Image (cartoon, rainbow, N blue to C red; front, side):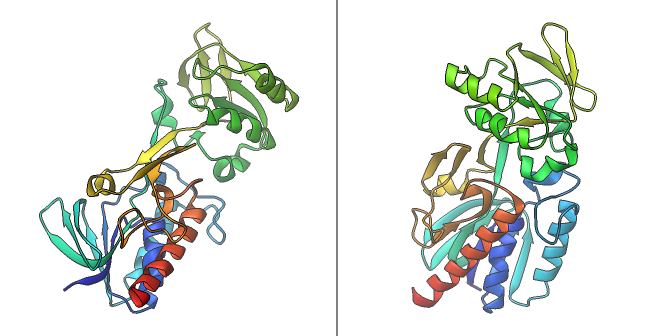
Length: 294
């Protein structure tokens, strides 16, 4: 049976979009591989009504609520290929199953490109983060390290003194001009240009000169890319943002392919659970309008 909407990605944005459509009694299929971006974090913060809750628990509860709607089909699996056009899209999964839909929504999320620093991967989501609004409060105004990875790292170093005493490690990733250096000093940021050798302990930065500096937490401005290339292979235009790559979408969340939409981290910046949910809800409403008005 042809569905009204096929949603590729069943995390926060995809489920928020689905909820709007299901409440409009539309037939929806969600295809989800089950790999959430925030799976490394034990708690989610900054999401009203869910502050401090395990993000996996938030996702599981949302899925349970969606499954109460009889017009939802949930497929656990990987969407491998999208084809077709408006009113006649086809999505094929890795196991060869095919699903037809009038509209298509990419809610695949993004993945974080971490700089090659020994020990960073093991601490990601635990004591090393990208979003101070999500994790800064819990550092209790302690010593915080910002390790440069991209030009966005300067913005991070300017912002994060709101949460504690900051040391900014340029780590050979950026070169500060006189104006940028003066601005950071004015904000009370300590600048250290010695390269980072590795991370140890809870959040200890070991430098190439042998110093070992302990911190309450670390922040790194990662470069994000779509978690998979299914939308790009389908022909959706990809655009560059200050935070990385995402699917180009209009204010109504429609991509450069008519009838195909994108929402959540893969279709907007900046990123957070609450912003993804809001963007997904908006995309769901816009998809419904598209089905109603053509």
